[in-house]
Image 1 (cartoon, rainbow, N blue to C red):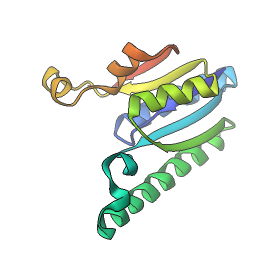
Image 2 (image 1 turned 45 degrees about the vertical axis):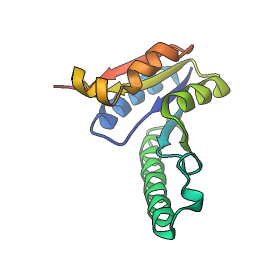
Image 3 (image 1 turned 60 degrees about the horizontal axis):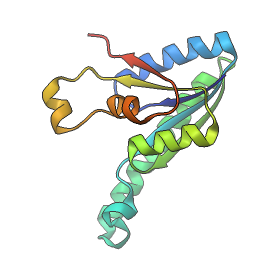
Length: 144
């Protein structure tokens, strides 16, 4: 089994990783841990922006890189075959593209359980994946 696990470093990440560890240990799954960093600098023009903006985004990207590497190391110590991926791009489309490219059997993501107003104003990654993904999904709900 091959799993693509999408995380955002929020509180729900711990719940997602606990479930993925359980599945991976039972099935000997290959796991790719993906975080889609926002925003894509080329998309918003950071390549021509002030140095302070580029430096801020580079620092943030480095911090996310360190976080995903640390999470992967902890999981790898449990005997799970895991590869961290830190990529930039539109979140939903990037996750789906990686899932197809890696030929995964399932995408694992979380649902924060935000209310209707949040979804109207901001949207939902899990909802977008449900609408667009040709790959089966496992959505881990946030505990209330």
